[in-house]
Image 1 (cartoon, one colour):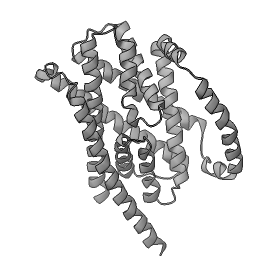
Image 2: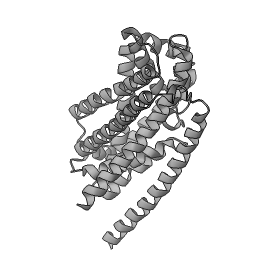
Image 3: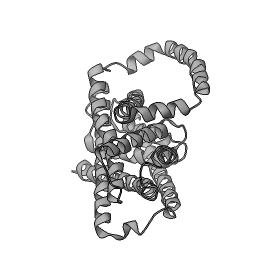
Image 4: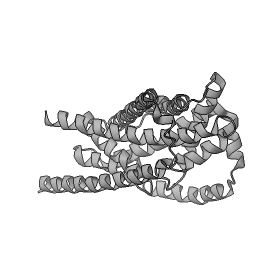
Amino acid sequence: MERLRKIDIKKATSIAGTILMIASLFFIGIRLADMWDYLNFYILASAGTIMLLLLVVFGESFNVLLIAENFRFLVRDLSQLAINRPLAMKIYNSANMYKYIPGGFMYIVGRSQLAVEVDELSHGKVALSTAIEGVLWAVAALILASIYTFDYLVLYVGQRDLHFLWLMLGLLAPVVVLVAYRFRHKIKEITKGLRAMMVIKRLMTMLVIVNFWGMSFLATMAILGQPITLSLGFTIVGLFIVSWLVGYLTPGAPSGLGIREIVLMMFLSGIVYEDILLSAIVIHRALQIFGDLVAYGIAWSYARIKLKA
């Protein structure tokens, strides 16, 4: 009876995943259609330029696969269970596509399928892994943004009205403390196995990943014709990471859509050629979307081959 129940849950999650993937592709199509009017096709007329941009796509897809592997290690270390790589890759990359669905939280729900597919793995461990990963993304981006462009980061924060944020934190803090105390035994059970060195290892990998995103945008700028000096390169990479961080921390923005672009335009206008900047912002976002699609295709094919072997 228990086995039949688990089969039914797996079937239900599979159907839900299919529906979410269709929805994701629909919203990706809408996003790419919105970008169409902003693309400068004269810049893309060169075959060499297109080939170089395709290299950026494959770099982005490799980066996504590295993110999936990093999450698998996090779940494995936290749960002390063997997590099948092909299965984890497939589930993570499927969930990664859900981030394009408005609301910005469906990709978190998608990861819960890992707990359904892996025996003895609890939903709590997957949720905790997701929470740790989320915090580490912000920490990694903040560290790199401070290294590359500390002055711009301070300027941006100084221009924001943070009174509402502090008010919300002040109101939420007592609630969080009460909830944590109420469920302290459950929290202790879920966090069993959490080690500082484990978190540090994952953070090191995420520093590399976030740094690559900045380098990827810098490469896109250079490919489209922006002259790059060492100083300007550091500035572009750092400001991209700042913009990513702002988009990441903005609730309800799927994959930071719109937020990242505004911050980049605000800081880089006047520093680089503005026609190239606008094209690079749009094209790089499109390259990242295609990178996600390529990574999903690789992960799906890899799982299909390995899991049937």
